[in-house]
Length: 181
Image (cartoon, rainbow, N blue to C red; front, side, top):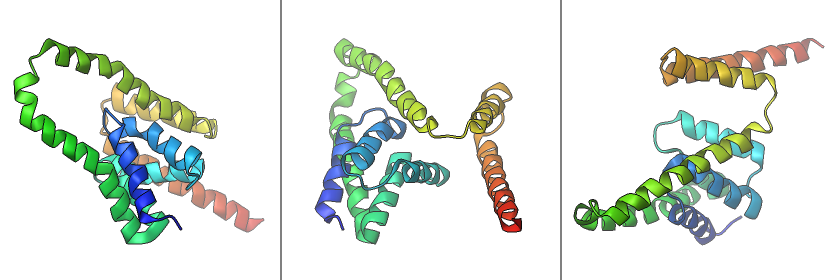
């Protein structure tokens, strides 16, 4: 059982060194929880990400709550959540006090423009990493979902709901087939 201070410190580090929002945090969360701490395996991490995306709220915050709860129950969830949001909260508070005066500064503007490609890379990295373990047929599902959302303008919520229902139906079909053998 991990001490609460270790859970807090791990998620504090994740929150402290992540720029670009929740999806940009995924590779850092993955590295910390799977590679370094070995608290969860890759398959479970993918399940947690799926769950974190399906409930309201930021994905990194939801993931921290789920992992913390898995590690130490309610206290672990609070420790992980506090660690993940405290750096951002403090930074936003400081920026809010001074941002109006520095936003028009060309150096600050250039720094924000320079961070954009890095944030895109941080988002694409975990997508490629998580896609490695998927069944090849799921690439068709990815393409169909992307086409439905970007090509046809369907609501991402409807596409996610349809995908969830399809996944449940698929697993039930497989379970029935195994039961008949």
